[in-house]
Image 1: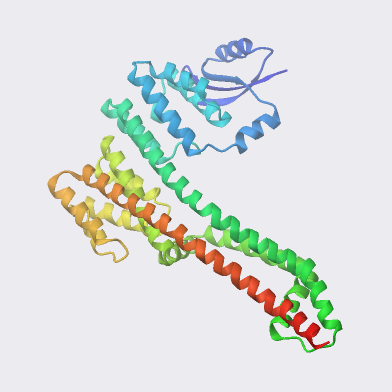
Image 2: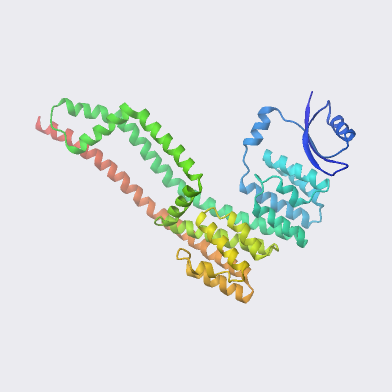
Length: 401
């Protein structure tokens, strides 16, 4: 007999409950629940195990949330009722997990639950930033506007991350290919060549002995290398889950040459864009700083924003804490202070995000220009080592015969 998952409210206590009920049809399942005194908000046949597993495993990309926000804002601006707008978006959504979540939200909203409260029940889909924007839009009656702000913010973040990831794909692919080819040569090509040199009985150069030793180690102890790498990966993941490990890694990332500046600027962009969007949506500056601190993605900046929030709560200036931190560019604190003094903090945050976005784009462009000759140098060094260790000794031996 089919099983149906439901979300309902008790008629007497208005308590929200979830569960499953068995029935021949969906209509009979609804009747069974109504007889128990439940007001059904959501009812759907339970998927088969493999399908349910697929939905659970499936992730939701930020681009899909951007599309959801923009579609919903357009429908609401056309004066389509919220529940109807949500169901229209469901029909246009391809991601199964997001589709199921929006359908459940639509059912809950139709049952009398606030839109933001319903979204809050799905923290794996909608984060604090998303929820606070929606909640502020509900309170101010500007849901359409804040959805547009939200979509714009998320789209800019997505574009920036995509640009950085795209720039990194080429050098990572080339370096990974070089390592892979090097390992294969050490295990299958170098042993045959070095065996020929050993059989001549000649004294092998240092470079040849090092290459031969590395090759012998890979052939004899490849399993040890795999265990070491697996242990290093598992160990690092465990350490990074601890507060001290994460703090150390975040500090290390900010101190890296070239990349450190990139991480700094990306954190500043996230801070500026997120705080501006929250304030435009009607969230006060203290509440905005609280939300932003949780989404910085870096402990150093998370603590910095938390300190700023406490300072502002006590009547301090927004830019004062940033001015005392050497890691943060002075321009950031100066512009924040100016924006607060003039009462134009949102335009200042917008200018900051635009400026540092250009800086990030310049760094990424320069990085690509620097990485190409670096890769060529690495390739040249590898070829030179092979020539000195293998080709040159073979030439010398053949010349002496």
